[in-house]
Image (cartoon, rainbow, N blue to C red):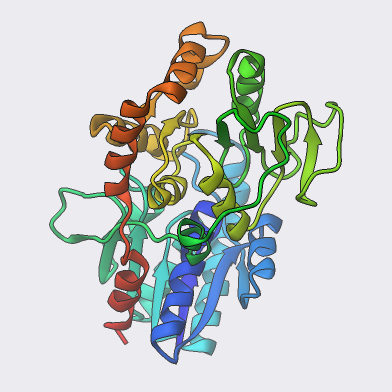
Length: 363
């Protein structure tokens, strides 16, 4: 039997898709074919994880006027035909989608061919593609609670490599000169966050901590800083209390999260789930103009339950209050205890397994 899993457009769609696919393979004999966009980053992730994948033509769903909309309409129609032919040829028993624009052409083709479709929405607010496909899907699973009674709340999956970091004896160090300083991990998401990196850099010398920055491929603004040989081959630069990575795999991400005393991050659902799994204090700075404003909604949800601190990007730029807050938080054991206790509630231990079982029920 064969199952198609759709995940593309960003690591936030792809990494959970791979986690769920691996769980399906662990509990069944089904073969998995991953469907992604033709974006090079999408394909690199599947190649690096040794997964069989099929790149699909599709058009991005823009909710504003752009001449690219006319071009992408053609790509979407081509992707629909491509999906239809692939489904006829491969005859999968069920299709699972993590959302995003790459899911729409295949989801519609699946409806015509009467192939069961299962969706998973990671964020607090449903994306446009999932909203459209939810009307024809057999099941809609969610990472956050929704009021819609037809949706099934299962949480967001976390890769096993992240979880293993919690139980491993982490005895390595990052080579910081001052090992007594706390470590702040800056996460900009799978595609990096240049604005966030620039803002943090402006505050760097005023915050009493060591910094580890995951800046995203090709978005290293720190390259002009002095270089020095360090423990990880991926590291790009070094300047006193700063380490910069363009990209790390899941195992090293787990290591960095485990070493961190504080995480400052965008508000993608995948990152939130990873941080929650390792119970780390978190400051969320949502990406402005994210699709359906999902990052702000995610951040507001956690802040309302005192599971994270929430700042807008414009508020922290050269803001002395933000710098003072970070310095105080690093020394406030009681507040950190509250944050870590509350964020743990956003980790669902059996999310991947429960999603896999819901998919397999339709075979």
